Image 1 (cartoon, rainbow, N blue to C red):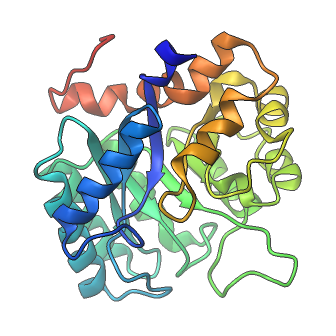
Image 2 (image 1 turned 60 degrees about the vertical axis):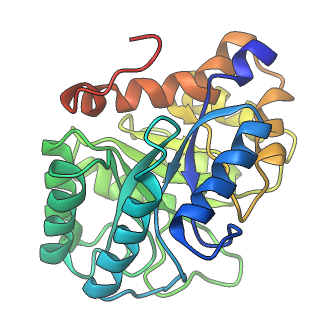
Length: 269
């Protein structure tokens, strides 16, 4: 797999938790350890510290941290703009600032408002106009989710209202046996593999239930190690071609329209 490991694209990394005092130092740390795991490009979003219910001012401040982190690493990293369904008007402005007029290529939604809420429609519509994929954090907690925390079923409702949008189901809901089935019929929802233990059967089940073209590699580093998350795919009992799709081919395909619009080319274009 060495020749394929060099082509891994990771859709889910954070500045928070990375070593360093500044965004530049944190990004340097991420890129260095990603390279050790054979990862060619990473997608980074959200600054630091984590906040469950960030204000519009905090969203802008954290997006500025990511913009600074990207400034020296455009050959190794992409950014997704961090927005909140609680502030749709301000979020659309951030999408315009960071995606339409800036270098970012996608949208990140986290916890503040469950994603099936109608307030998210304006955010999704703007992202779709710009051909920007949307990565929505999802989780299914045994003890109950955080206020405003979405499940894959919530995302399936949103995706049904916006059939032309592209959604990434973050963590496959954590409880992936349930999460995979909740988005199975939502053809514009892809799952990403990051943030869970490298459990035998996860990637195999995702490929079997959704098909190999709807599974995208993510690590959730530095909350999880790059190596353990790559191992989920490399050690999975799926074909080599399907491993290539999961490790990078699917994400390159999803990002290709917006990268092309921005005049960004990469090997394989």
